[in-house]
Amino acid sequence: MGEQTTRQRRQARTRQAILDAARELIVERGPDGISLREIARRVDYSPAGIYEYFGSVGEIIRATCEEGFALLKAEFDRVPLDLPIPERLVELGMAYIAFAQRFPQHFLLIFTRLSSNLQDSRASYDDSDTYGVLQRCVQEGIASGVFHPRPGFGLDEMCHYCWALVHGLAMLRVTHLQHVAQHFDLMHRRILEVQVSSLCHP
Amino acid sequence: MGEQTTRQRRQARTRQAILDAARELIVERGPDGISLREIARRVDYSPAGIYEYFGSVGEIIRATCEEGFALLKAEFDRVPLDLPIPERLVELGMAYIAFAQRFPQHFLLIFTRLSSNLQDSRASYDDSDTYGVLQRCVQEGIASGVFHPRPGFGLDEMCHYCWALVHGLAMLRVTHLQHVAQHFDLMHRRILEVQVSSLCHP
DNA sequence: CTGATTTCCGAACGCTGTATGGAAATAGTA
DNA sequence: TACTATTTCCATACAGCGTTCGGAAATCAG
Image (cartoon, rainbow over all chains, first blue to last red; front, side):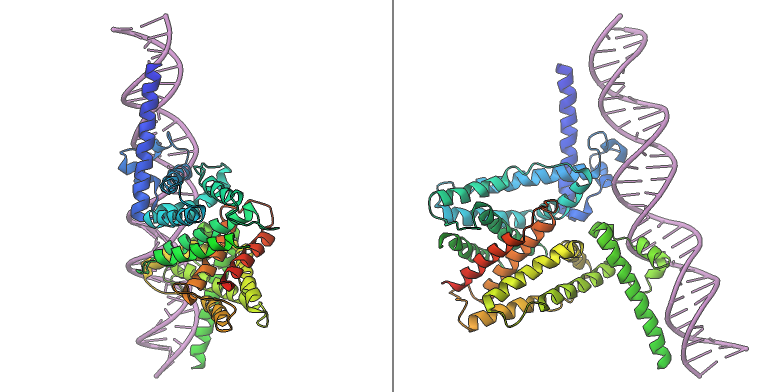
């Protein structure tokens, strides 16, 4: 049993080393720069040796994306829970965008490569309950009477509304506007404030 | 001179055949499925022969994206100009989303591969003035007093607000929600209506 | 018909992900 | 400790990719 754990620990350490190399590679070269052979070089393995730990390069990408979701969740957790709900919703949105700006390659990997990967393996992934954070915030806003749902525009629509906007803002920032030096933070905040206020007034 | 035009016409026809093959390939296999060698096979050329017409596979992608922008512009042009401005803005957004749903591979190519392509060649691309359509519509709304700008939330912010939301809705639809059978059209419309109304009330 | 130019391709280079079969290292057991 | 079984790891090979280069073929201009 102790020996088994020794093996498992070694296995886990190697797995993590592979994921670390993958993460560095993504940061350096972007989503297209991921290469199983380059990862193998960095962890001093042969290309074939990697297959003992991951079944394909797609699995490595999936695992790296899950690490990314954990990072996003960490950004969410830094938003104070005692903030008034409208402000909290704005801050959650800003956290989403901040994540995209701080880890643009991770963000792009998750939202432009993950889904095309999954249609092959049909497997799911762990998003660290990031959507749940949004959902609970909006739900709280509705329950406390701050947000006003109407027929055909309830919790689901509100959540999708919020998610789509911050997703669009973040995505545009790291793709089409990636080379624009201007700071968008203030504009983003103003936009989010307008959106949140549109949830308040019926 | 007549002979020159003969050559130029032949050249243009071959170029178009290459782009047609590229477009079909994208539709069949998605943004990752583009292959210069497969394009060459379909137009009965050798891989090296393609380089007489395009300097790299990146150039083919750029040209295909520009074709995509023209398609998007065509969707925009189907929106009646005599519609009241708020409804017109909603319809423009729906047209954007409709384009993404009708040509998901084109949409993904444009908004997830084009920008990573361009950082290499530093070159620009023709977006068929699609952003201009949005800008003029919002501008008209402000000028006619339907939309109410405020300090720190003027034309630019409004446009970015609108673009980001529809972009997020469209992107989520064709990536993370691509396998959800449910029809999102009604939800999208409701969301856009809420957003546009938030531009009207100060 | 001749010379210049454009068009096209065969071959090669270096890169990629992945499958296979067997060697090396490690583990459990007698 | 010695033997067997399992896990770990790699050399090799295969098929694909984008791109470059040199020269052949076709087309053009004079």
